[in-house]
Image 1: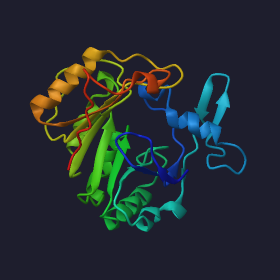
Image 2 (image 1 turned 90 degrees about the vertical axis):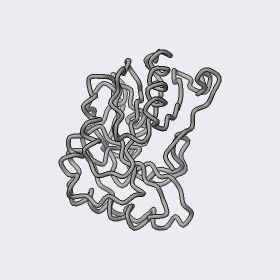
Image 3 (image 1 turned 45 degrees about the vertical axis):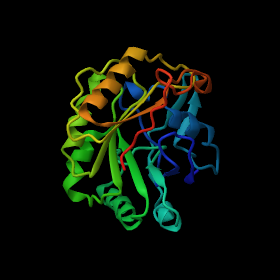
Image 4 (image 1 turned 180 degrees about the horizontal axis):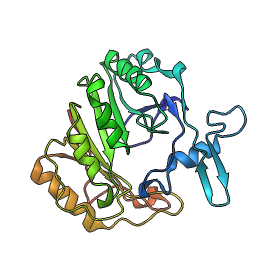
Length: 246
């Protein structure tokens, strides 16, 4: 599960040099990574000791492990691809040392034929380390924003030296009017999916789409979500939005 093709609509592969995570905000309540990790947490499995099934559902154990043996995996992939970094964790988690984050950035810089998509909910730590990271043009940096309570993550991202900056508004749990999109290159919107999925209102999506159009920001509509996202699809007013940075 370290490196694999991905069914996530906006990427092509995943690379997980960190395993394990902890909940940090409301968007984490039904985390897909937590569910998957709990399924693969048995003895000898990739997420042993990192997640578990409880009466309340899957839960992280608070343990986070770096996986140095996987650091050089992207260098072995000779064909260019978009790579989601740490789809099963958060590179800027408090338990990941700056020195290890720098190693990950060094690999991404060397593998300049790929585009690396890094996504975090820990925007304050991202900004804290910004000046100590080597930002190459193939590193796309994003923050997750599920509702207005965590809107400050966007300001932190904007202050970084990333060449491509993006927002993942997924799971979108509320309206986000008057987004400040200056300096933002790409916006992904998606509804929550899987057990317990909370509903996303169409008017929220339409408003964000129109804000992106006005600001000339690439807009990508990932999914409506729901318990069975294959049934709800990803068309918005009869159209599929797959815009992304060049």
